[in-house]
Length: 330
Image (tube, rainbow, N blue to C red; front, side, top):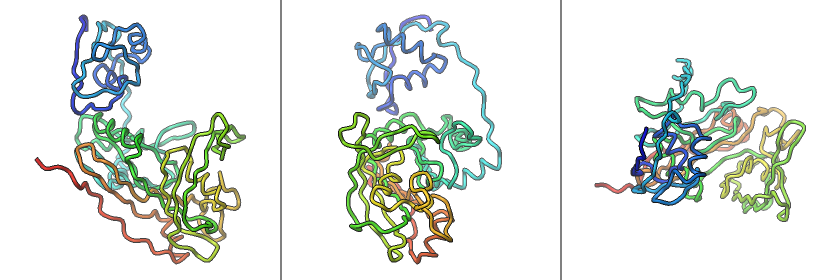
């Protein structure tokens, strides 16, 4: 591009970050080059200076300066997805429409890559295009060993709207956990700040004092749905904040570590005769749908939790069929 250009933000780009908007329209523009253009005022939104994280609104105008060789496309390495893995991913789909995919994430599948991770969901998302031009996008995360409902956005606009819903706490998330021990009282609210600390085996999240500089407020509502004497409990957990490992550390904080959580519960998180796997399941979500209405979805228990429920005498209801409700009709 050799001349100044003004582009209008489209309806499906609501709430998208400015840097991601540029990545969408000018994929060859390096992040560092964009940062320099913003710093020098060459890129403007509605005539005003902006930052990489500025959220865009449909109808706004974006001034794009001459990019020249800065926008030269960079070669992309296509990541082929093993056909078997692709079929397995397709089987995990609980719900799909033009904007959203809901997956039932299995135990042990990392959502994103990292040191020592050979296979991750993020690396295989091309298998879930279902004929769409855009690659699905992650809009929230689950730990490697946490199972259940995971949302993907099928367009940039849907990703922006879903991310905004998570930030504003418009998303209602429900988790199920089997804990070692039964909490007292049996239901309540855990309002305990968390902080990240370095450890011998990597970073850990710990309960922190409210006056500590790096403490982040973390709130979880819980209630006991059933119990096996004082030995174990089936808890419903509703995080009102989204801190890393929040539910796992909060359960330890009330004296009831999640079964199988060796990292935070240690030996006290194990019960003889039960799987030494994390018993934390993202049971359901209710979130504003990008196209209107509310999307509600639930995921069935994973095999190891089904076996534990049967052994403890817990009876879980069937998950609801995922559906979008309350949308306006034209």
